[in-house]
Amino acid sequence: MDRRTEILEAAAKSFSLFGYKATTMDQVAKIANVGKGTIYTFFSNKEELFNAIVVGMIEEMRTEAEAAAIEGATFEENAHARLMSILKFRTTHQLYAKLIDEGKEIRTPAVQEVLVDIEKQIVEFIVEKIQKGINRGEVKPCNVEMVAYLLFKSYMALVIDWGKTHGQELDQTEIIDLLSSTIFKSLII
Amino acid sequence: MDRRTEILEAAAKSFSLFGYKATTMDQVAKIANVGKGTIYTFFSNKEELFNAIVVGMIEEMRTEAEAAAIEGATFEENAHARLMSILKFRTTHQLYAKLIDEGKEIRTPAVQEVLVDIEKQIVEFIVEKIQKGINRGEVKPCNVEMVAYLLFKSYMALVIDWGKTHGQELDQTEIIDLLSSTIFKSLII
DNA sequence: CAAATGACCATAATTGAATTATGGTCATTT
DNA sequence: AAATGACCATAATTCAATTATGGTCATTTG
Image 1 (cartoon, rainbow over the protein chains, first blue to last red):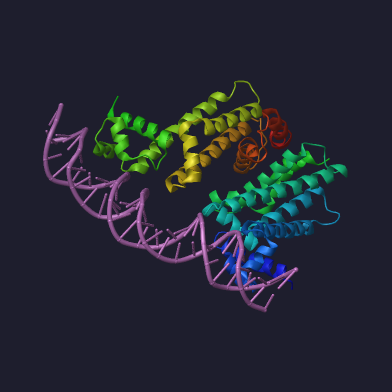
Image 2: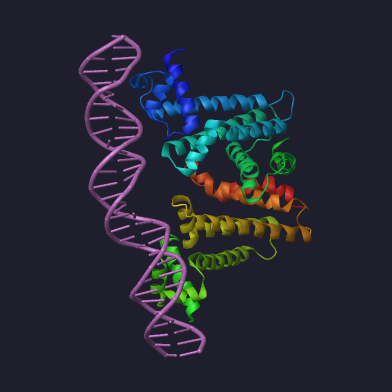
């Protein structure tokens, strides 16, 4: 494996395990079996190394979300499956979960910026899918950006936030029932 | 004015100006022109005094939200008007705005708890209104708690959050257009 | 004598000086 | 030419000393 990859893997491991702030460049160098200076021949600073890791994670998330869609399923079914996949990734993926925690608890600025960027990219992903649905004639023309945003926020609310104030999580079917009869209903032709 | 009221007014002023943490009982006593011990004959501790102030604020918010509704208007029009009134109150009311800031920046536990409670009461307020709409035959029977939650979160997202990532605020008409064709459409008979 | 008061106390919060840790560099080595 | 790690400036942490604060209660007041 080349040095760059070894550094990336070491950094991914450390960021996932300890978060951004608690990961030191010395530590990354040690895990990667590399002199600290070597890291700086590939990445200009800690934040760039971090961003490279996050770019990789977003790709991974996107791939999983794409894989969640089923050939021949309706737009609504696939939208639901992909969104649930993304939200599952969000809480399951060690690095993502760690970053959410660090953003909230320690409020490391670099982490908070990255989290905002990830959410933007998720919404853009949804935008793409809606746009494709419109082009295929499965979805009504609409304010795609707003609809994508509303969809994402609604899923966040029902899947992630609800449980925090209401003792227990919502059932998937309850979520589908509600969104199917509201947002999706007006979206689909 | 009786001592209790003087204390309440002093506390409201101080909490609004400085937040929960930065308000001292000595300060409240001084503003209220009262010995510090006197405060403790009416309120068992700082947090109880704080809660009393917040209860008053919620009442105020509720009254304004009720006043935003118009006799003879549709359920949708009034729901929109009331929700916008609440969100306006949220950012305009000095104490509420201060608490949101303190909850986020200093993360005073007493403040965060109170903020969660306020949001719960807002959702309960929406629940009431939807239930009333159902009883009147203006609104379809539905999972009232979930719909209220979704409505509130949608308004929060479009009115409060959107601007933070998208450079500028959404226009009221854009919000109505979207929600009217989605959530409200499926709600109203 | 019942209500009000503020000096007082235990403890929590803050400060700042000293210490340690860390991101990044660059002369030296491989 | 690429890799390295000792080195440096500065940021972060520690912790003892100090200050501030919530809450009490013996005393005062009307």
